[in-house]
Image 1 (cartoon, rainbow, N blue to C red):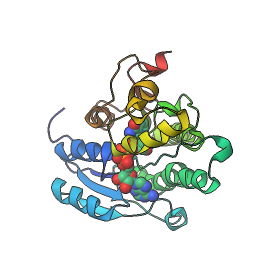
Image 2: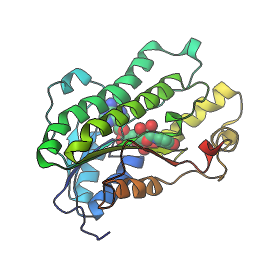
Image 3: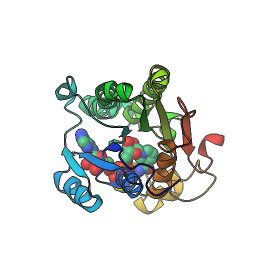
Image 4: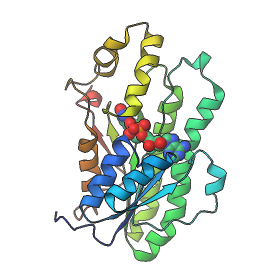
Length: 250
Ligand SMILES: NC(=O)c1ccc[n+]([C@@H]2O[C@H](COP(=O)([O-])OP(=O)(O)OC[C@H]3O[C@@H](n4cnc5c(N)ncnc54)[C@H](O)[C@@H]3O)[C@@H](O)[C@H]2O)c1
């Protein structure tokens, strides 16, 4: 892969202002892509865009009706924005469940729907959906998140089948726990629902299933995303690639 293999490509990364999305934006920009940081956090999106010579698209992806008629011009779409809520089903706030489905299922569908016509016209496109080990496995207390990630897996596969004849691939990337603000924010909630001190959450909850006993780094996820949009990825579609330290080998 050359440093400029994505030169001339336009890449939209949702949730690109933080964590995994920001690492993906850095990876794609370093390879020559023009990056569009689509994020709710205006200041962080603008900072990332100016750092990377790209542009910010300040958007609330939970407002899915506003995306119904969207047309999106991009060669690469990384559906990454996401949030987490941790609670038993019987206590799970129905609005929080719906919010997670809107941001993590409806918005990816609407963005894929908006970006495909241009990709089809150009005969080339790469869609990468940041799923999770929780797209393939369940954990207690994460009903909304596990439901959304399993749905994203299905959406990605259908996109792969429809896009194939147009040069468009669609794949999922499935990390275990990654060192990002999203994980830091859930440590207190995990401690409460499991009845353990916050200091024990990483070891006793987050690393129990992985054979490699450490968090994933955002750059490790971005590196795989980079490969999935690169020059040797044309036959790779409809698949789900784990970066989970062996979690799903069990
Ligand atoms: N961190 C992990 O352990 C982990 C593991 C597996 C999968 N993932 C997935 O990776 C993705 C990114 O997670 P992260 O850990 O980097 O999170 P993060 O909290 O660091 O970043 C998420 C970004 O999404 C943005 N965002 C949130 N709601 C939005 C909305 N309504 N509209 C637009 N933007 C919005 C936030 O502003 C933020 O910049 C998520 O889909 C998450 O489910 C994370």
